[in-house]
Image 1 (cartoon, chains in turn red, purple):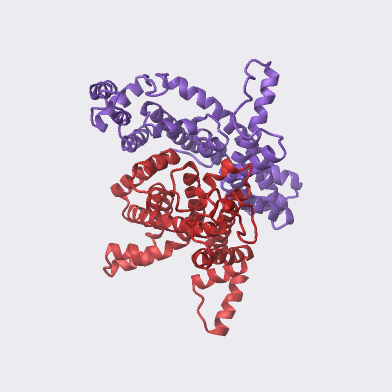
Image 2: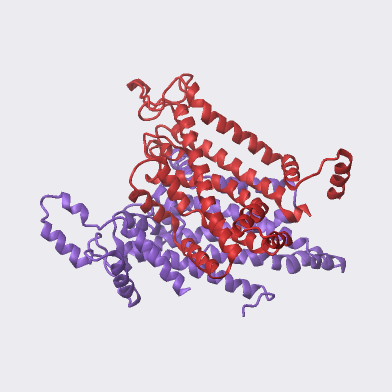
Amino acid sequence: MAVEVTKVEEVLTGRVETYWYLVGKRLRKHKLAMISLVVLIIIILACVVGPYLSPYHVAELGSTEEVMQPPSLKHPLGTDELGRDVLTRLLYGGRISLMVGFSSVFSALVVGIVVGAYAGYYGGILDTILMRFTDIMFSIPVLPLLIVLASVIPGAGVWKIILVIAIFGWMTDARIVRGMFLSLRENEYVEAARAIGVSNNRIIWRHILPNSLAPIIVSATLGVGGNIIYEAALSYLGFGVMPPTPSWGNMLQNAQYAMAIAPWLVWSPGIAMFITVLAFNYLGDGLRDAMDPRLYR
Amino acid sequence: MIPLFFGVALVTFAVLSLVGDPFAQMAINPRIRPEDIARLKHAWGFDLPWYLRFFKWFWSMITGNWGVSIFAGGKLVTELVGRAIMYTLRFSIASLIFSFIIAVPIGIYSALHQYTFFDYFFTFIAFFGMSMPTFWFGFILMMIFGLRLRWLPIGGVMSPGIETAPFLVRLLDQTKYMILPVIVLSLFSMGSWMRYARSSMLEVIKQDYVRTARAKGLPERTVIFKHALRNALIPIVTLLGLSLPGIISGATITETVFSIPGMGRLTVDAMLSNDYPVAMVCLLLESGLLIVGNLVADLLYAVVDPRIRYS
């Protein structure tokens, strides 16, 4: 039914409806996903622009009267144990958390796609070796090793956390991509490309990969939210982003001990993180619905 | 499976050896003579390269000699791990049962009443659970029930000085300490169980044989419980096998928040102090359970679904 309507529209408007056009159209109908998208854009904008607008500097210490003050007009979200403005730190921490989320997903994705694509496309011994390795990485308890890596790799930079999360985050992507390649490499267009002498690398990157993007995008969207929580958990345990650089995770690190006297320190980073992750999850869910070929056909 | 296990052990050992040897710290203490450090290193085998140590260690592991902890006063690894496991199992099994019993029926009911208020509400709850950072949720519960209302203790596993009390009092006391951690542990898994049960049931009730069952006039109860539910449970049972490893390792954060001396904490502490006899046993238990869990999931899948046969 829906297909026929779009066909008529296609004829009337003379516009060819590509897969991605349809995905966009279906996504726009998914209310929660659209709300999430708007919320995410607002959060990202706030985190990028906010610190410039704030009258306080991230590392600016308040006077002794300003230590652990509850929310007021001067400090909308209160101040922390060093008298720093929580709202400023929250926005700045959001930058770090979002950056960790996006970059770790991106790096994991690059590794996952390369491993999955070659394993799925060539099959045989290469597939066996790569997938055994993936299985081994999958079977290792992640959190303890994340912590060890975080404490072993020198430096306190944010890139270290991104690297550490990516090292243990590429396996799911590799499996998804491999599965897609296994089924897509049998298609006629791949055979046609091969018949006219297209190189294997070109077939992998230009012919098959664009067709296997849908599940990758969904997994990446959900992954950003997941990795933000990961970073927060690592920072909470004291192995993530190192103070004084704020992140939503390490803002909560000291909050546990101040909980009885300064509950506002617990609320704001947690709520920011929760809303962001919730929005990523809803967006991922909406994308999955919009891209699902079973609903599409 | 065995090569997989070996591979996991090798990679884990290699990463662990990056921490360096546990006696390096002693070198900064002027009261410890360098000869003594060298002697200790030799006694524990730390003068060998890591791959040789790995094979030595792996051999004694197979032959059943799990060794003693380097730091915890020479206690047997089995003793340390055994005690931690008991705490962890108590919390994780309780939360597994709790979340399964609540979430699966809700998921199935949502699927049968798709797009109703009930469905939307619990879909939101599921997303809520999956998006909530566990440790933050723990903070909130502690703040509300522990500090504000003072109904429940905010951490630990039992009240001090209760060890000699009668059994029933102890049981009640320890249950009180379990409530908050179990809720925190359950929240996340409840979300995924709910979503999983819902989508699996949705898939099944669209099948032809369900329509056939309805068409031949079977009562709705029979259609749902005998025809649909049984098939919808197949992937759920698989997920049960896959959640097996989480029983031991899935609680590091929650254990830290509520100061529970369980496996998660033991593993992390042992790894950071490079108490490798303890750390390796913990890690291997966890990954071993993961591998076994996958196998169990596969086997269960074949048991509950007669269409699948492994050759």
